[in-house]
Length: 561
Image 1 (spheres, helix red, strand yellow):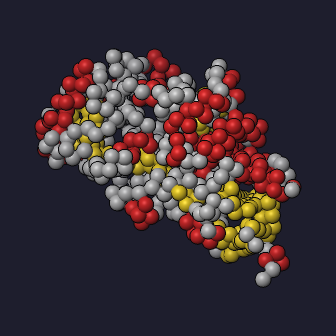
Image 2 (image 1 turned 120 degrees about the vertical axis):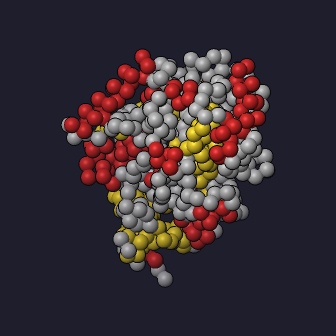
């Protein structure tokens, strides 16, 4: 069969997935390639649109403009120390060498404006080469309606939602979370963002921050570069001829079409976030419910692609874990637990009533601890976040319940939140008789300001979401003021991060390490370039963007050789 005579459409580059894969499409199209993006679902943006929008990009010009001094050597030494042999060194070398160029490309090709996520430290900043000031950037608030007809096609999430329309950056959230402690900082920030959000609605703007802003800007950049986008078009087959990928078979609106891709195909279809069977097989039998924040369409398409072409797979036991509060509504999405576990006056316990990890650690490490993936002792479910009324009076809850405000009744009715007049009574209500002893131990350490058990509050990252007005340790405070609360806690995630093996250019590799010519894998469809670690805020989005960019550059060079 001569496939070249049977193509229904022909492009230079085809990108499967409309999240960070859009960066590859933009890069290729701006260099003259006829580029098509196919999206499995009915919405654009993938998991990127559902994310916080931060990007861990060492050495970029936004950081330089903010006065941050860094070197590629220092960033690479950090990754070498952290990642070690859990991922190929060439991948992280390529990442560090090209992160700044990707930021330049985004700023040139999209309407995006970026700012430094100041003091959002590397997650292991205390290691050699780590940064306490932070290497991450994030979008400034962006008018989603400015992208026209594509605006209603962007994915949205209620995992973090404000009481009123308002774009919230990471710095904003940090300030607002301490409104009960530092109102002079929080209130002006809130007023500014409410004015942008609510005021924007009055003039027909839809101001967004985070991943929604990032995804909208990437869509705008793709359109401006001339990229064609097909929705409702899942990839069904990779066409392989004489060891080279020449195109794909896509099911567009229910009809199969063969699409030529002379420069190559970039697989950016995400992971297997919402495939419970695969997650229990490869990760943990404790994942009995769908707790992922990832794109709902991420069900493991990468496995069929890998099978068809003989691609290698790696790190399938890994995910971007993120502790969360289960939804109080049947079938609802989990609620991000972003700062709650880092603040003084709270602790997380398992069925023994005792703590089992540093609650303020980065969310990937926290999730691994919750599932017992490091100590080999099995999962710690069920788990509870324990705090008292002093804590409730001071801090946000579930990202939207203001300090001192009553927790909505639905949380109690669903059993997600339990309230009691004493620690002993609380332990009885949640079936954790050891809670009295566990709380006593925690209160002893909190009163000393030093966590002898798990070193909470010692790391730079721990303190980012702590309370600087609490001394000597911004992450430790006693749990002593009734009533007391217990909140169900689950090991949710931002998506899986194991997948197809790829090299430093994003090229897909077979199990024997040889390259499949013309095929690339990026984002969560590829095995994590950082192995079993999460180096800093936005490393998942960052690596998706960087390797999409590198894959596109390689495809451009391949086209012209």
